Image (cartoon, rainbow, N blue to C red; front, side, top):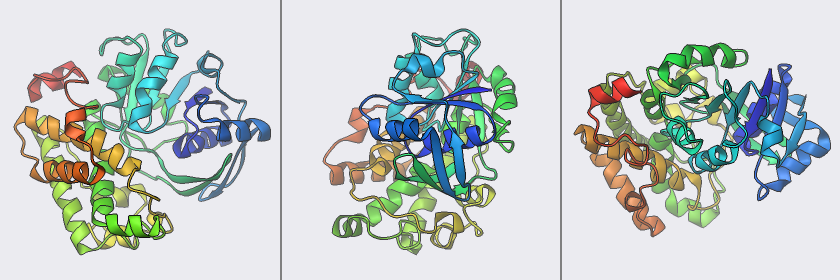
Length: 359
């Protein structure tokens, strides 16, 4: 298959490496403001990995010409933080053609909807199918341009849904060529709610804010950053997320149980499960608080979930408190910014039953 990967960050390099090592023809694109990894991959002719997956995998094209990357691609993976989804969609719009499939990986709460709006397609239009996944299938970090360390390649606990949802099975046939464990989600709201990052990252970051600022992130985020108190905060956020799913008629797996399914953890608890997780060992904290653990996981994911709660009359007091406290710490109002809400996704005003029908 011909695969286009949009995004040269940690996840994009891991997706490109994995599909290339499995024998697929891979192109890697990123915008010109992110030149380092693109240049390194182009010069080397591929990506080098160490860790759970290791070796060298060839990449046929690495560059800044999105038309060359996506033209004729059987699958286009848009891999990046939540704020990259719309720019990727807008850049792709002139180059995508009928019959192509795009997978936003991960969803980061509503990714498929954002991408579909960006390319000017209605939710139910299946001329170009856009799907998203509940999470990235790797724990991975770039060690230097063109080289990655894969701490874990997930072994389960990943869901996928397409827009329209009737096409989910078709997308799974293609995606399972590499990710044979991916499960079908009911709809893109399930993939959004199954995103565990807003449960984990904001709680750990906020309760370790002083340590992050004092050390510049010179400690292990999970091993040293998760204590019983941190676990209790994560658990409270998770219960609210699960309640949102129940109101929509979808099962949301608790995050520690999900971590066991994915291979990160051996114990499904909110404290020891994370602090002692084999898949998280050695992962350093961020260098500053100005990082995606707040900017993405609060500003996009948690705000989206809290606004969904308001719409469905499901209380989210812990999420609301975290949004407020992180806004104070970062000197910005994430809720007022409203970059990812039911309104921005075109879903405001619908009941739980109506949302199930239109998605």
